[in-house]
Length: 115
Image (tube, rainbow, N blue to C red):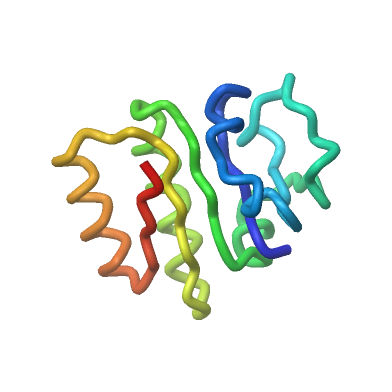
């Protein structure tokens, strides 16, 4: 799969560019249960497997959920040799955005802020 979508609400899910939802997957527990999953090619049960199989990770969450997701992803991504892009659709405080950007680029990840 090309894109892994991580979102916490239907509203945040709707903020994601439609082009990024093509050939995308979601993982149980990392997308809103009430969301329509028909546009996605797969619904995975393991975040680790989904991250390993994806070229891009698209995140649209409430700001307070970013820390937990980022730490979990960073642990998985450091074991993957391919360059992964992370697209952010969350409005983050400028200081947090700077910290996340520095942290992710230090892990050889491409961080793209779409907000």
